[in-house]
Image 1 (cartoon, rainbow, N blue to C red):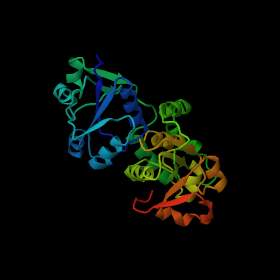
Image 2 (cartoon, helix red, strand yellow):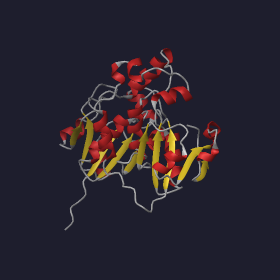
Image 3 (cartoon, rainbow, N blue to C red):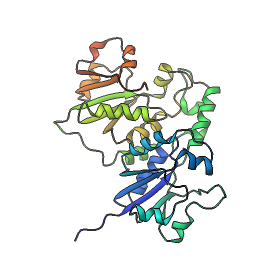
Image 4 (cartoon, rainbow, N blue to C red):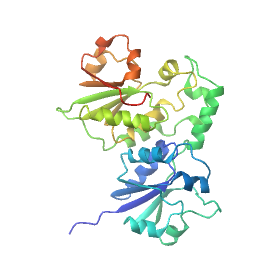
Length: 300
């Protein structure tokens, strides 16, 4: 007789979905077999916490793109109830080891805690939506230069904790490249990972069977965009990309203009880029492989 799959419930705002959210979902998924994620509506969040940064439809899409998520429930109630866990056949609820309260100050999870259907995961240090907003405000007043070191220019809180370990964990169980795979290469800054990035990567998947994402260095992003970018450093941006279900592997500190040697070294079969970025490429001959322009996707 087969064992009944363990279904897990996680809920939250997931406002400005970042690698801290993804890490919580990863930890929750490790506790069972099927992860159901409830996402609160804009109205529910505003009633209990205040207005959102990102609108609900984009938050739903961002959670759905996380590779550890099996099912998304839109418009989940802010108060986590046993009845809702039962409705979706979930055995228990998982939340981070921080306190979340209703507008009246009561614990959002008191009902499932009382029922013995609550477990905790470790909160990821050094990242939150509030922190990201503070970074944007900080960098607006302290723009980077071409010679800046991102970690020295920013407050200590901007540094990622246990970076190498997180990269290793986020890469676990990624599908290995097969000899017959058609390898697709995409590249970008992937700063403040959002639904535009998700659509870009999702469309790139249609051009092959294995997607490799190149991620530009902090200095490259600052030089090619504006001085106040990137908001997130290279390792943080890498974690966000690794959490996406449409990516199989990443290349950190990727060249803004990839050489033919680079493409051959990584056995790239097809390069995908946005139409808006093609003007940055001075020599189209670097794309000796199949050249695909994804012109119907938003500019990164």
